[in-house]
Amino acid sequence: RDAAAGSERIPGAHPVGVNQHFAGRAGDRTGNAPLPDPDLLERAVRSWGIDRDSLVVVYSPENPAFAARAWWVLRWLGVPEVRYLDGGLDTWTAAGGTLTTELPPVGAGTFDATPGTLAPLDSDGAAEVARTGILIDSRGGDGFAAGHIPGAVRLPAAEAFDADGKFLDDDTLRAQFAAAGVQVDDESQRVGAYCPLAIVAALSVLTAAKVGIQAELYPGGFSSWLADPERPVATA
Image (cartoon, rainbow, N blue to C red; front, side):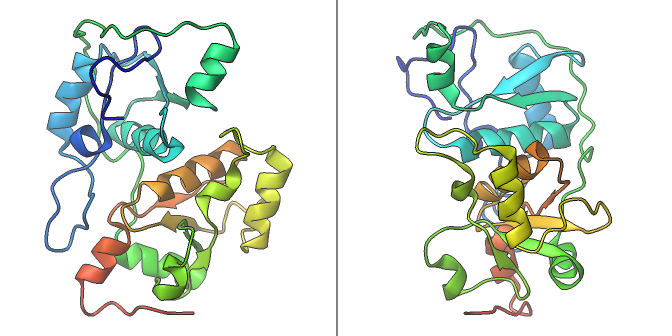
């Protein structure tokens, strides 16, 4: 998160931000939160002390989607071991962990980026998944009815969590995906996810990974889709 000075965090945790580190500059067709510049992110990753064999844990006190975006982008960059802390700070403190307002020192990591370790969807790829597989629109509310990629199905990412902000059990999550048309045991079926900024959609991809479903992220998101006047929009 874009943590304010003095905010509490897990000891040793580096405050990072989605807009600052895990999204690039918006362009004419890239969408409002495209993938970041790999070289800039590599320098940031090294400043967090990350090496090739580091185990990286991400969490967000405000919204799990922020941590999910970090999880996906770091894996795309080539960080091999990235895990999500389910429940965030509440899980940490419930297990007896302490919090601090102190910032950790700048690290001296040696990680070398290999961007593309995860293959993101572009607009053509998102359209193909919508036609031949299952393309998940991760938004809640009325956004889907107002406009979505033709062929996409609605499965709000927030429905994967209980009232305490923790994942529902795996059987329930698989049932949610199955209700959206995902063949949970068919690895040949392509599954993708998008939302306006591919932040909430990253949470859908993380949820899918939790239950053994390989899903692809459309980082350009609906903002990139709408930037192309030739792209159709469905309403329902």
